[in-house]
Length: 381
Picture (cartoon, rainbow, N blue to C red):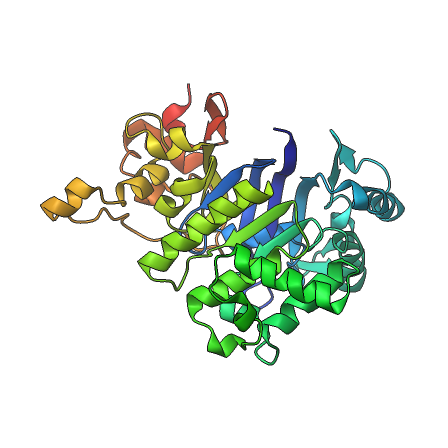
C-alpha cells in the first residue's frame, strides 16, 4: 500500500496577547497514513487531535497564530496538475517529495516576530489567500471531514435533499434529477431507512444518529481519497455508537476509502484501526500497529497508552464488579512550555534515576520495533 498522507513536525501555537505567551496546541506531531487503511488518532480531550485534523484541512484560523511543519499528500490525478502549478507559483520549488505534494511548504514566511515587547506578526490576508488557493483543490475533492456535532454541521434552514444536491453540484456537473438520485443513493449507502423521505426532512427532524449518517453521506459526495472522522460517535448511545463504527468500516472497505478516525475512546479506535497514533499534551507519544499498541496485553507500551488500555473493562472485570482504572492528575497546562516528559507527573514509572531524565528533557520518539515508536525514557538504551 502506497503512502497517501504524511504529517511531519506539525506545530500549532496561538499567542495570548493578554499574558504575552504562546498557547501550545500541537507540537512536533508526525505520522503516516497509507492508502486504504484506517488510522486511529486517540487521546484525552485537549491533547491536540482535532487541531491536527483542522490543520490538515487548512482550517486553522487563529490570529496571530503560528503553524509549521509539512503536510505531504498524494492528490487525485485530475487535480494534481493544477495543484502543482499553484504550489510552484506561490512557494517555489521543493514542494514535492516521493510523488507527494507538501501543502504547507512556504506558509511560515508570512509569520514574523518582533521584540520589545515580543509579539507575533502574521500577514493574515496573504497567509489565507495562499492557503485557500491550495486547499481549494484538496478540501472536499480529496479530503472530507466529519465534524464532532452532526446537527451543527447541517444547515437548519435547508432540507437534507437540498444540502446533498448542493454539495454534489459543487463537485460535479450533473443535472438536478441526477444529483437528487445520487443523494438518495448516498443516504441508502449509510443504511438509513426510507432515504427518499429523509431527503425532504430538515435537520431538526432528525435524531442524532440519523444526522450523523446524513453528515457521512455529505462527506462522501465528492468521492474523497481521505475521510477524517472527528469523534463520529460523540453524543450517541452505545447501540448507535457501534452501528456508526460498523458503517464507517463497511464504507471504507466498499469504497476503497482511507480513514483517519479521531476519538478519545481507545476501545472504539481499536475496533477498526490498522494503525494507532496516541497523543498527549499536543505530542505524539506512541504510534504503531493496532496489535502492538492496543491488543497485546503484555509488552512494550507508553505508560499513557498502558493507562488508556487499562481503562477498558473486560467481561471478567464487569462480572467481578472491578472498578475502572483511572489516570491520576490532569493534563499539563498548554500555556506552559514542556521542559521534560509531559506525562511525568502522572506516570507510575517515573521514579528514582529515570525521573531525573524525565524532568530534564522531553524524550524523542524512538523505534522500539519495526514501525512501532514510543516517546519514553523507559525504553532508551
